[in-house]
Image (cartoon, rainbow, N blue to C red; front, side, top):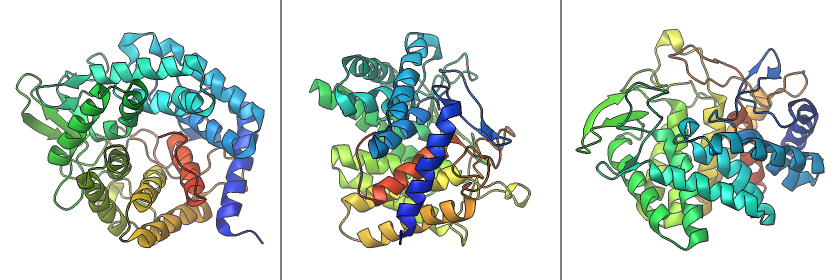
Length: 369
């Protein structure tokens, strides 16, 4: 008889196989009325479907997954060659697509794409404040001095580039940004800020913004998840214990604020009026990050594996869409409640981290990040 993990992986792969016949080489973001949309290649989530396809291919060796993933990667050349559409999230775009492809079979074109993306990300570094700038002025208001917690998850692109080039410059930028996150983003209680605004000339902090969270002083759940995973990966690449300690600190805050069924409210300090909004994508990402913590720590390893297992099992059992026509793997993700965008819907990165977390529980790491 199959255990819950074997069953969960099997049903996820079966659904991906079915939905890929329609989604093919497009760029899904959120699912409405059972169907994933198709965004522009320049949208920041455009790498996650490729990541799902590579994970599925690695498990099944079904050639259609590889074919669709490579086609998505090729379509991403459009934003890669257009400076004005590139931003701080190039890691999310090219790590699960081009870099995953290069790691899998050494494709030289994929290597080139990954290194170009890494060079762009490094070029966004502000030396005055030791941070990587978020967004562009044609997307947000004047955000020249803005940095966001999400960027922490893009830094493995820089670590990978340094390893390949045998050049510490990329890694040094990643470390500098991570140290700024330690200093300016993580609060004493383990909660995390979303947006910190610096004076781009002087480097000092000017203000803090709530961003996709409830308020500047709140605790946006997915921001905490980005921080958990990003700090664990910083420890993986750098080996400095302060990063692992930070990952544990934020994960303990995250875990202690989950509901009894291990689901997260979109912001742990949300108002009663907005607490109807959940975020399964935050739970999936945090669970995958917690498994990275378990991978690298001796103390409490079993605890972290157990809690991540409970989070992923609950997502599949209570929020999975296995018996209906819904294309998303897990439901009730929230993209941006303050902007009233995509609330309690399946989200492609939630699906990605859910599948990734399941495969980590099986002992499979390192294809993507």
